Image 1 (cartoon, rainbow, N blue to C red):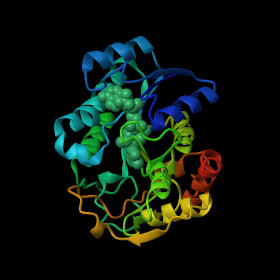
Image 2: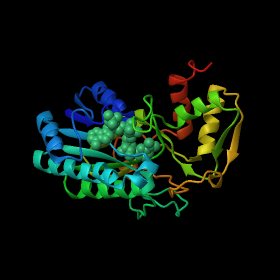
Image 3: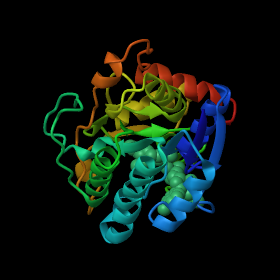
Image 4: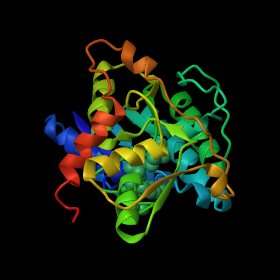
Length: 291
Ligand SMILES: NC(=O)c1ccc[n+]([C@@H]2O[C@H](COP(=O)([O-])OP(=O)(O)OC[C@H]3O[C@@H](n4cnc5c(N)ncnc54)[C@H](OP(=O)(O)O)[C@@H]3O)[C@@H](O)[C@H]2O)c1
């Protein structure tokens, strides 16, 4: 298959490029220099030239506090972008895979969210991503939307310049102690496994909305605790509450996703448990780099 990857130098995009190549696909990596997804002419020119059978869109405006003040840009990239790609998917005949977020939920369910649960976005980022989901699925019959949570990869996020693992390792080296919240619960997931399982979803040929996160759930503190234990960090790690960090942005306190749709697909491997996946990632990419 000929697969174009938008946001190819990003955290998830990098792993998508590698996974597609590993599986023998012809890869067309597209970066911000090649395509601005929110501009119709740019998107149409790049995707027409690429002649893809499938397009993965890993591009996003996902700095959550910035989205609160740069609302037009958030909606341009996260909503108009997938609208353009969906329209091109309809016109040119490619399947498009779009990525969204656990933040479309308000967290009040306090139990893992399935794809049929009603979203209720609490902030601009989440509202713009939810709008993008509707466009991705309703403007093309060949759309797949995959919601993710707490992603981390070898190349920390291009937009944020970091991910939770890289921030924790940095803080442990620089600060006398590190304080992490116990009252926000999620399903942290490595981008390498997202890439692998996204291709399994594409292969299934079944369009629609998917949740794709590691099995199990944890607080940000438990996520950090596993980093400390695996990398044998000695800086004190202290439990705290979100109440300690005044934030202008409302976020869900509970955003665990249930991979219900994915798990119903035939011939797919279940997602790995978050702790097993995290330990494997740390051993592969950090273990021998920490002094
Ligand atoms: N981070 C999380 O924990 C989390 C949680 C749930 C869902 N997600 C979703 O996961 C997806 C992937 O995130 P990520 O961390 O891999 O992102 P990332 O590392 O920031 O990568 C995004 C890529 O998109 C490119 N890009 C940005 N704006 C663009 C535009 N207007 N047109 C074309 N390309 C553009 C960026 O290029 P430049 O670097 O050159 O700007 C970058 O290569 C996103 O959809 C995000 O919303 C993330």
